Image (cartoon, rainbow, N blue to C red; front, side, top):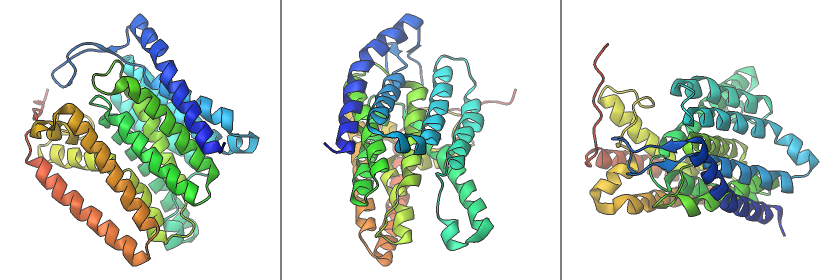
Length: 348
């Protein structure tokens, strides 16, 4: 049995069976998400489900990876654990949300960078120390941005776990086709853990992953994007593929950022029912239909990444331009869709 398949099965089984005792623990310690005007659920739902996802990924990785692979991935595990801990503390109500954005996520990004995982764009384009410093800065921006995007994506039953599972599947596929065993195994473990949790999280959800789980998945998605290397593809395809694979969450963050900024709101500090899934649900798809539509968006982005990976530089450029055009059209369309508008807070 390949390491990737074994990691998937361990992650799936562990997450599937850990979720119920974690749910009981959340209820016992009072970690529940209460209904509210900016929430879509109508009854209190236990949080802390991210602990089951974390356990599934870690158990899979430490069961499959040998000594050298574990050592190589130490920075990844450390950064992922940091964002998960800060997320769980926020779920408990012990942290201000800005601490996650301005401390936990950058710290995890720096640890990942120090471990040798980084972007490789400007070193190719510019070279020298300038390229190295620019790639370092890009790495931090990428990790913080993707982690934060998954944090705000967790607003509807099954959405965040399903989008992460879809992205993990395409990361695993491309890594496998390019002979990256460690990346394939990590992606497969994440796919299994997210899918196992989804059994209990799809509508009607019996448990939420909380910010700890969402940030953990976001950090892993960002890491997989940085570690994916398409050996036989053009540089453009190599840079474009992770963006396309994570297209669903990047699109949602783009829509929310543009929409809230136009209304004078801070994108990451003003939660509300104005995300892509909210608008799709209001167009008649309902919550489950909107979530499945987001899965489909992730699948389309993943397929586009595969096409770009096996195209010439010109072909990859065409795929990228089409993705930009579709994004612009979709943002314009969904910005006109009905959604609940937040009110600007009056100055104190």
